[in-house]
Length: 168
Image (cartoon, rainbow, N blue to C red; front, top):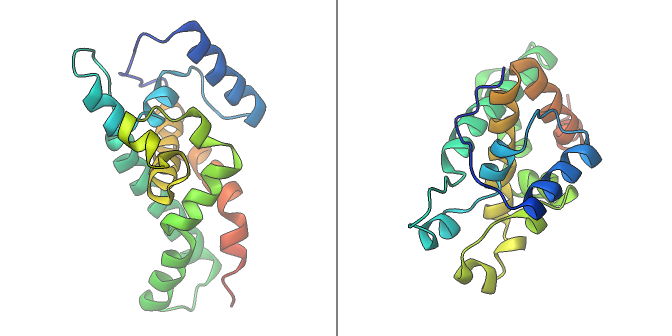
């Protein structure tokens, strides 16, 4: 789809690093601009106010909605006899921050995060909330760069372990 509106100036080293990650993980992304935004924490953007830097909060917002829809649809179809309450509990166990953070840690999101000095010094690269939010932002980036089906495959592939734990 290529709906990227987050063109930024990247250093060659940063761009190369993100392209390497996209290739290594076979991420369904055309470019790395949205991925760069997905890996930019608000603390970094706040420390660089004199530059035009987008943080990952908007992508996280979108990615969270896509994540919820994909998992809702998956559970709805997998468990046709379950009432809404059971589906809600099942979804909560599969899309919680620790699950998203574990998915993010698998592809070393912390290594690629742009963090402010305070977050860097206080262990932000391994903080569950930061990793989980970044995973959701990556989902948002994949959705914008592609479509729902591609984002759904990415999500279901990465959350398979957690979805398989939900018993019938």
